[in-house]
Image 1: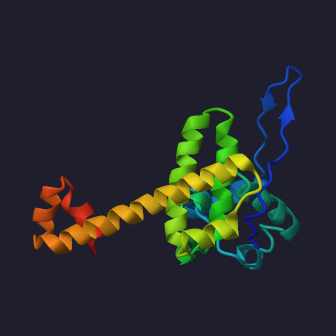
Image 2: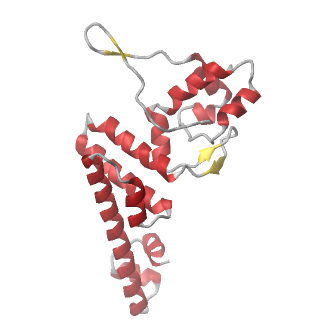
Image 3: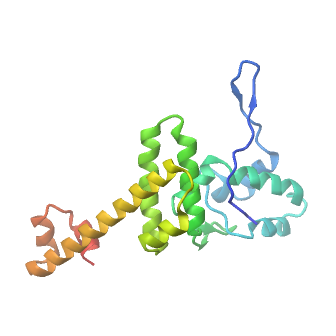
Length: 210
């Protein structure tokens, strides 16, 4: 543990008039914030696998195992935590140090879960964000576009459409980079001069032409 997936929505309580009632925060989440503010504070960080056992071993009295399991489940299903997974941040240990990357499938499912949660309020914005995050995830996965599609093809047509848009954007980025690299080699210009010729920031040109 910690297991981040599958991500399932937590049940909501409602008032008599149909409004959602705010769920009380689990008391152990307050304690986790006090003990590890860099992990459970204003900014959530992805937790390393096995952090549950480490927390129980480090604080057997303050963090009883059964209650901690419930509290961590609430934490890892929260939108803020899923946002951390989707962002591509590494998993962190109890000292808030990055220790391992989040597995590509966890990043992928977190992005799609965020889309589902956001699309009810702002569909176009949610789609744009999901596509950009998927572009970043595909490039970070080190998988080819074909391998990524085969490994993560969703069953839902709408989600498949989002994935295809992201894969197309990745293909366009790669084609643009290859075209610029060919033009740069043929030009004989310095990176700075080439950047000026094509209206590119020098820093961006350096990244594209490596």
